[in-house]
Length: 237
Image (cartoon, rainbow, N blue to C red; front, side, top):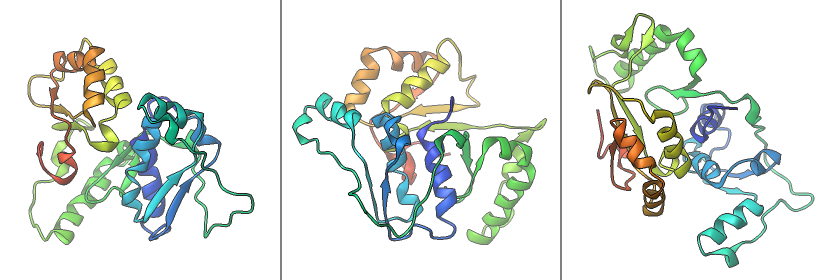
């Protein structure tokens, strides 16, 4: 669906599997007709977040798009077709209908606490109150600043945005962000947006095509190819 990125798909998968330990210590195999419609950026963006499901590892079926990507990287001879053998048996299956996935939001303190943004907006105060309770229970912090303070006139105000890491810092993600922000401004400093390209080749291509210039003109801070925000290095609140 329009506006749904790989992180939304990953969060939907994590929310559906983590709480019950559905795929704990398992190897996830991504197969089916939906895979063929996904770019390599999209597949990678989903795959690197499967760690949060508590699976051991994951593998994807390959196809012509995989072969094209390897060839573009100068590794075309490495391509091998990967598909389930006839009669393959599994411990279980998770059916993920990509057409039903909505834009998602994850709340503290784990990606499995994910909700469609539509649902979050409809139940904002109740869900944020639960975050306050988790803060006191899980972190032992009493009277901590509440995310409820970010709700003004029925809207949730965000202080900081980061597009980064092996899941978020992909070419397609940053290109799309640049297209959305081109000609606009991120504001007067109350909102801070940092963008970390996932690799030097991604950084180079975004630079050559002018997308980083569009992001910078909108007020974004372009950072080095670094995955620090995932574990609290670099840009932190």
